[in-house]
Amino acid sequence: MLPDVTETSLKDLLSGPYDRATVSVALAFATWQRLTTIEGLSDEQATEVMVRAVAGTLAA
Image 1: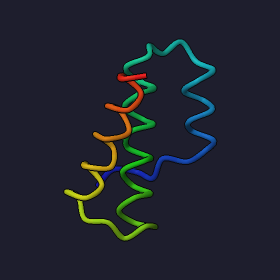
Image 2: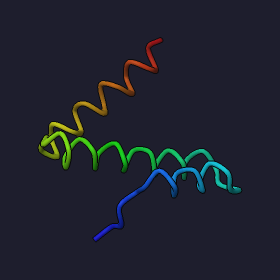
Image 3: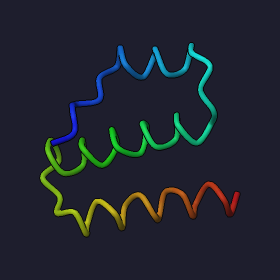
Image 4: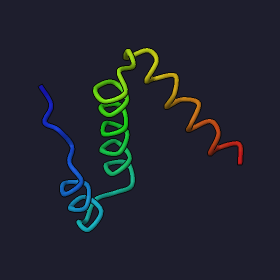
């Protein structure tokens, strides 16, 4: 099982010598984890929300 992504670990990622893809994956996992665990969405629903969010930023 993957460990929880915490605010502290995200700050560490952002301050370290990591590329944008690494940070993006960490943020995506944290978002998915919040949507499924805290918000109670299914994996499919969480994926749909994230796809719509990314599509919205690309269209802007």
